[in-house]
Length: 250
Ligand code: IPE
Ligand code: IPE
Ligand code: MG
Image (cartoon, rainbow, N blue to C red; front, side):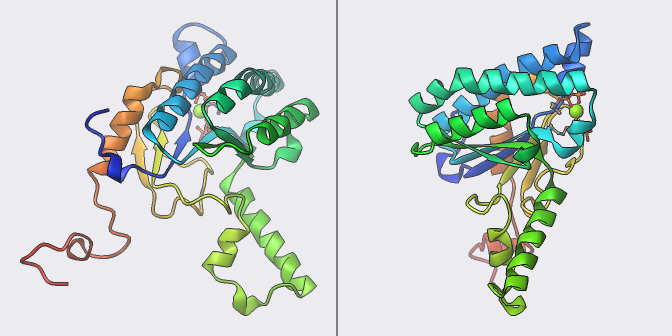
């Protein structure tokens, strides 16, 4: 933790929490056992981000494609979601954490949807970390949804095509109030995005770790932040433009 430069902390960290099933399999257990233990990592990483002073943490908890998993696993995950929200709302309030959600939440079972909305309302006044749960989320859904919103506004005469710039487009995404992540971490050794924040990750630094999500702890989070801080983010410019030294001119 001492190796982290507090003045260069990412404002927004996004995580693809992957590897619960393999973690359980390694132990000869059912996949749900892995999901159950993954909650402990969520608790620890939320706490770690809040302690560091990170402003936004987005956790990819359930993708659009995950609906196609076996019914028992989907049901188990939805129950775990309800249980966890129920148990953790008081702690979120205690730690001044605001819960929000991105994704097509209409698809969630009614009990999960209602509990989620209750927890969002109960934590809405908190001013510390914003915890964004990506649930029934996919990047393509997000982009298509934005295009539908925009098309509707144009058809109604509320928006002119010429007014549609990056800023307006961004305002129609599910992340409209959230800055793009500076750091994205994926656990479990997979090197892919799996339909996460496709638009928002345009210039995000990606960190991939072989650690399976239920084993992911604060030390791994710190390591990813240290890795992030060692990189030069150029945004298409040259190195000299980003960090001009005395001998180099712009
Ligand atoms: C991530 O772990 C949790 C969800 C996608 C809900 P997985 O369930 O994908 O675990 P692996 O990738 O099969 O090990
Ligand atoms: C991505 O993990 C989705 C979440 C972590 C919620 P998956 O396990 O679904 O991704 P793939 O299938 O390996 O690409
Ligand atoms: Mg997986």
